[in-house]
Length: 340
Image 1: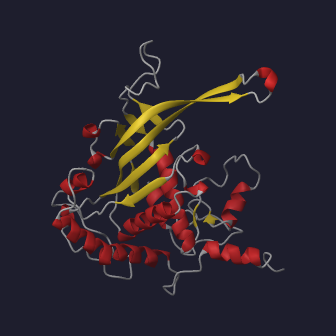
Image 2: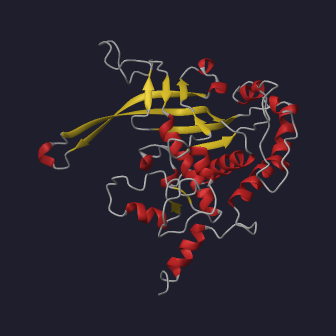
Image 3: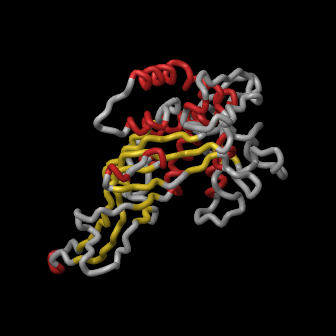
């Protein structure tokens, strides 16, 4: 539960009236909780455990009795969420801020230009205060919501705090209000073996990989500024990621061909109180009548109001959304490209 002096949503910049039908102090705002259920997650170096792996001979990293807790880095999670936000922009027919600097030393030649042609604009070029010169690609007419949420340059801090996820294999040690999850850490070993008979399957290479399994909990996001379009974008992005969770580019972390990173995600109803958020993850309890009423209010109007605010931010001067960039790209391919 939040303090009584919390500010409400800013909507004066939108051509619509927005009114939260409940006291904001009774909601989770400015926090937004994303519920995550992941069978296997392998985020590379993105796992920090509370055990030193070379502590003593009696400690075995793969011993199932080891109750290892730790933290999952927000960097991989942030990139995953950003991909979803970018796709929402593309579906609405607008470009999104590129996460990289235009003058960066990329490994692939002309990769930045190819990205711009695929539905992005130069980082920060949507900010009128940072536009410098002309671009061979269309310039956005207003600041994109991705730039608002994730930030860009030194003076432009992101409006969205993405926290790490704490995890523990012991459910009673997990506090979902802090953005924690039940998960089980293992250090996995991989061997590449010789394929010829003479070597009799001799290992050629050995690699270890950190992974967590059966992750179930929350990711805590916090808005620095309360604007309805920010909530709308996060809701739509999470919905897109859930609907496309087995698409390679939308999976989270590594080992994607082995089924890792398939995320079942949902935005937990922000109208819930702190006790109700905890109740969602209490297997011994079901939803209360109050929670069911809040679910109905969220589904049958309030969520749509947040999305409507997002649509106003992404619409053109006539108040209409453009053709999906994905549809436009498909049409271009079917027609054989641009006509000359």
